Length: 108
Image 1 (cartoon, helix red, strand yellow):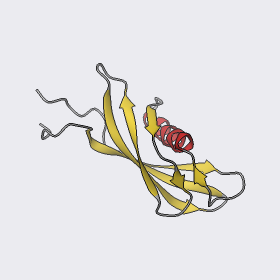
Image 2 (cartoon, one colour):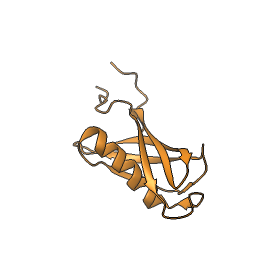
Image 3 (cartoon, one colour):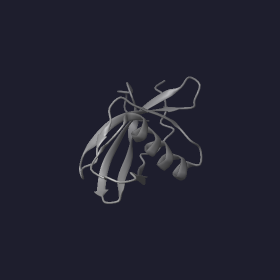
Image 4 (tube, one colour):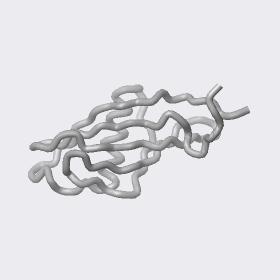
């Protein structure tokens, strides 16, 4: 039996205060924190999000991260974090993939 999808596709917004220059690069930890903040606001619990790369503070820039859902066993989902606006603060969108990583089976 293929695993079922527990998370809907989420496309959320978040704002990251940069304290000065909005064009700098966010660290991988800052990107993960912003994604987790946005997801927590939407679903009510804070997920574990890990990003291997930072994110340039330029509109349209994006990076991929991994969300680990608290299930037994844990399930991982891909997450895209994209810069949507640059100003004194940086706005990003957060979108969780529809299917779990490694889940190539069609949904039932």
